Image 1 (tube, rainbow, N blue to C red):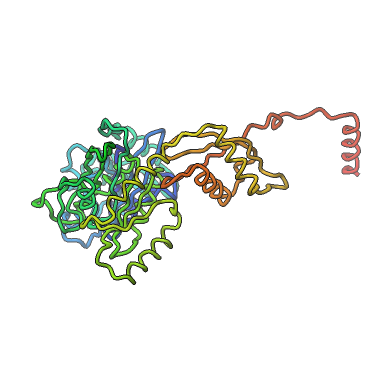
Image 2 (tube, rainbow, N blue to C red; image 1 turned 90 degrees about the horizontal axis):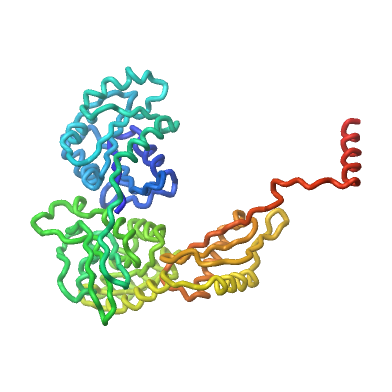
Length: 462
C-alpha cells in the first residue's frame, strides 16, 4: 500500500499550492469528495520512484469554537489516514490563534511524522520570520514560497525521508481475479458483497459509511477462484458515530491498486453524481477493468428506469466498453450476471498476443484510416507489439509519433479493442519514435552545391 501525506492548516496559507507541487501534475487530483468529506482532495505523487497519496484538506476556520470542531470534519480524518503530516502556516501573518489550536492537537499525535511548513516566506528575513513559530513546539519550521517554487525541493526531500516503505498487501493463493467493490456510502456495496458470497460476511447497517477498512475475502464459485475486496470493510455498530469518519477514501484507492477488476456500484435512485465519476476516473487511471452495477433497480417506476439508462449512456460514454448491469443487491436480481462480465474483463485485461498479430491489426487500422500529415510529411506507423497486461498496453513504433493527435490515438484504441475482442478493460497505446541516424550528421556538399552556396552569400553582401 502507498504511504499517505496529509496537508493541514488555516485557510489561504498555500496548502493547495504545496499539494500541486507534491503531485506535480494538474491532473493529479483524482477525487473531490465535497459531499462526504467537505473540502478534502486526493492526489497521487511520484518522486524519485516513490509513490504516495496526498490529501489536501480544506482550511480550518478560526471562528470555530474548539479544536475538535475544527478538525473532525476533514483534517482529523485526513491525519488518521496519513503517515506524514505537513502543517502549513503563513510566515507573513505570524502565529495565529488557529495555528495554536492545530499545533496543540498535532503535538498529541504518536507514530506519525509531523513537519511545520512556513509558507509565503519569500522576501522575508528567515531568522526573524521563523523565530516565533518555534513556540508551536513542532520543531524547526521549513521555509517555503510554494507559489515561486522556493524551498519545495528541501521540503520534498524531508517528506521522502519520512515516508515509510510501501507495504505489501497480503497475497492470496488464487489464480482468479481480485474484485474491488467500489462506490459511495450507502449505495449497497456491503449488501452486494454478501449477495455475491451467498453469506453474511460483511456487516450491513442502514447508515452511510458504517464500515471503514477494506477486507479481502478469497472464495470459489463454480470451481473458479475469486477474491472480493469490500472497500468499506467491517465495523461494529457500537463504533458508528459519524458517517464522514467511517468512510475511508484512502482504503478505497489502495484497494483499487490491488485489484484486477473494479465493480463500480451506483445508486439508481440518486443517479450518477460527481463522486461516482471521480472514483471511476481513478480506477481508469490505474488501468483497472471496469464492471458497472446500477443498484436498487427493483421498485423503480418505468419512466425512472428509462431516465437512469439515458443518464448512464450520456455520462458514462467514455467507458462504453464496460458492461452495465441493472441489479438489486438486496433481492439478488441480476447479481449472478456480474460474474460473466467480471470473467470477460479479467481475461481481456490479461490477454497476451504475439507481435505479428498486433502488427497485422495495426496495418489493418492504418489502411482503413491513415494517420494525419505533419508539416507535409505523413506519419508512418511501422510495427507494434504487446507491452504488458492489466491493462493491455500496445507499443507502436514509427516516425513523428509525438505529433499524433488524441483523436487518432482513440481511434487506434477502439480498433485494437474491436480486433482483440477486449471487454471491460482500458487499452493503453504507447508510441515510440525511432532515432534519426542523420539528425546530428551533416552531409558533405558537392562541388555544385558549394558554388551555389557561395553565389548566394555574395548576393546577400551586395
